[in-house]
Length: 452
Image 1: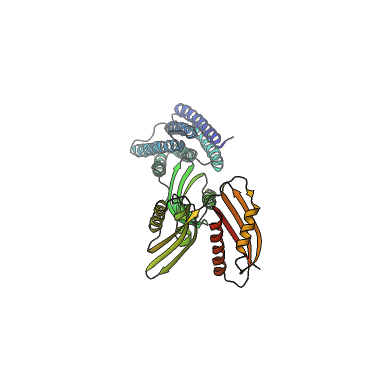
Image 2 (image 1 turned 90 degrees about the horizontal axis):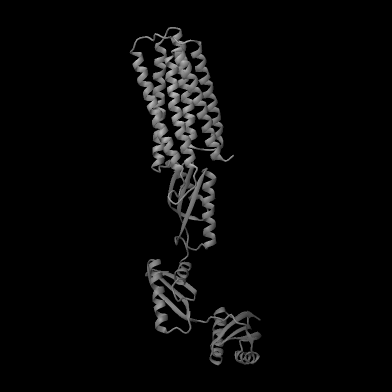
């Protein structure tokens, strides 16, 4: 049995018990001329009306979400509970009014007998049975309609107890005891109903306990990887709680990392708050992210940029100095490439404060075709001859050349003295690349230096 079916079936059983109590109390009340039983049977009629409202509300609330109710129909259950609370308040007011009126009136002329006591005991047992089945249902599923009907069952038991005590007191001659007990019960019912009305009114206006919002904020802030909790929006619809969370994550995090952190936030909230549906929205923040990484990210998304490397930043008393190498299409005109450079500088200055100067070194980008390569041995001999002109190259390793359409892809392994500085090796490699490019048009050269 589904939880929703359990909820509606429990309310149906509760309604059947109320109706049976009404029939017994009204019949014996009229037969024995017991005003207390007749009043309690009228109370049972009102209770049955409330239970029907709660039953209908629970069934409507179980309808799945649609285009007009994207959060489902749980609010209908809350509305039913709100109306039920108002009816309980009316019942309480009736008890108070009747109690005061009867205390000021003459003594009753009709004294109920044993049958009236039997009817009250039957109703009392019925109320105890209702309380039992409602409590068992609430242990398996949460729902404001079930909780309202449980309140009703307790109040019915109290009201029937008052009626029973009243009948006993009247039998022994103390007729005022019935009215005093009814007055106490009326005040109790009024206080309970006002509390119920207030709770459901808050829920209808999407109010959530501040402690629950604080609990969610603490859960989010303690989740590893969350930089900041920007906003927490929560609302209740029936027994389900919806939470929409906006968090800030490090701009250095990959999309996969950001997704994992968001999933952790959702899981942690659901583990702490039952029946919760969580939506997490994340945004990047550059707080505590290295400047070089931020520059790389900002520059990479500028239209026309094919690649970024050699990013460096230096801070002095005059501000921040940034330099970077940017790859652009090799066939692009200088004017167009310079416009890309200006766009990069603008984006970096907007993202990073206190910048004094930005140096952008433009480099040609060559796209390697995906077609099958054709090895060219004659070119390899020419390259080997060129490299031998540099005595600091101790050994020439493998030279691989491929012609891909109109581009020569050249990969070279060279050995150098291990005591040479990296800067010196880089200068030699750059000279070799420059010389080969002058000899071979459209050459893309990769030289791998290693110690001899």
